[in-house]
Each structure stands twice: as C-alpha cells, then as structure tokens.
Length: 234
Image 1 (tube, one colour):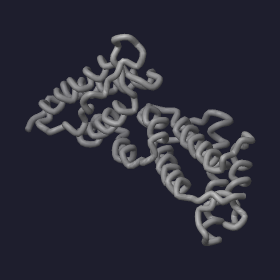
Image 2: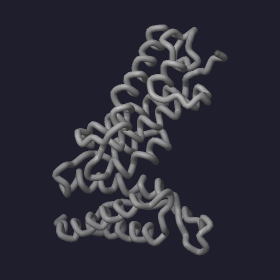
Image 3: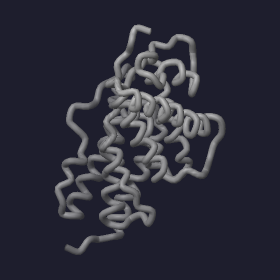
C-alpha cells in the first residue's frame, strides 16, 4: 500500500502540536483538544489502512470540573494515548531521525504518579534532567510517606533515617536477608546522591532522553519494591 507521506507528516505534525498544547495544561484538557485528537487518529487509520482503535480515547471521560459547560478530562488520559501514538509513528514510519520507543517504555511504567509527572517531559525535545528531577522527587516522597516522616528530612538524610542496612534496625524493611536489605539501603542512598541531588540543585543539559527513560524505569521498580516493604514499629 502506497502511503501519502506528505499527509502523514502533516498528521504527525498535528499530534506534535497537541502534545505541546497538552504540556501547557495543568491537570485537565478541554474536550475540543480531545475531539481534534480523535479525528486525527481516524484520519491516520484511514491513511495507513490500520486499526488504530487502541490509540483512541475512552468514551465518557469528560466532566464539567466546576467550569460551567466547558467539558474537560484529566490530561494523563490523553497523554497515555497520544505519546504512544507519536512513538508508533516515529518508529514505524521513520518520521523522526532520533527515534526512541517512548510509548513502549512509558506503557511499562506501573506507578500512576510517576507516569503522570514524567509523561509530557519524556516526549519533549530537550531538558531531560527534568524527568530525573521528577522521578527522584516521587521516590523521595514515597520513602517519606512510607516512613511516616514528619520532620521534613530530604535526600540521603531521609534514607539514612528510615532505610538502615540491617533489617532489625530499619523502620522500612525491604528484606529479612541482611545482604538484600543492605543493597536496597545503598541503592536508595545512591539514587539520592547521584540523581536526586544533582537534578534538584542546578539544571543540566547532559541528560539524553534514553538515559532519563532508564532512570525513570528503575525508579518505577524501586517504587514497586518500596510498596511491598514492611514498616516496623521503630
């Protein structure tokens, strides 16, 4: 099947514009943007001769959200469809020379808060230190909540207080195996020293999208293990 590449690039450009518009939204997007997206997905399906229904928005997602008759919906719903579709087009039709499988890795992230905070900046063109900043901030906050900290500790001080190397001395216990507990204690401390501190104190242009995605995926794994950790009475 011959594809009109000019039209494909135009539709791809429309999606990129929607992505930029969505990045400016706070937590919600207007129905008019969702309608434009749905029409574009339909046009792409016709042009490519493919079933793209998996990229369509769910039905009945819009509410008024105290804005009179202006229907809106949470932006992470549109991000969860738009970003994988952009990646699908880039990877499958070589629309971007710097192809990164954003959709694949983004779709593998299990933590909803992490997805919500990193989705739009993962698809940006630069400044990927912001992904690491947000991912490590979520990790730090999750340690704080798990340990029920009320002192305002941050970074390594927070980890050193609640994730000790020895299980019988730690408030947050990842494993009864001393070696594994020691490993998680060191990993979390290293995440704060190597990634959290550097991206919170000053901007950096050295991060590539690929590197930021890898850190984000690792944080997702740590969040899952942290959720399964036990909390002692100490």
